[in-house]
Image 1 (cartoon, rainbow, N blue to C red):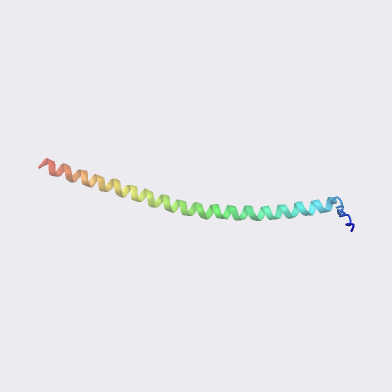
Image 2: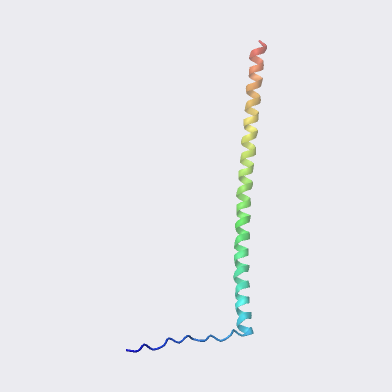
Length: 79
């Protein structure tokens, strides 16, 4: 029993219009991705700003509390 040979399909070279279409589609997809990344960075930046504000306020509270404790200790020692 003889097997039939497998033939490969020969693909023709893409035309300039095919390449231009693919490039245009690629540019459109990349532009959309870029906009999504940019909006994601903007929302992340707003969240980071809130976290930074909270940390600065907490650090200020810690420093103020330490100052109060030190002042109370000086007052107790001075008596």
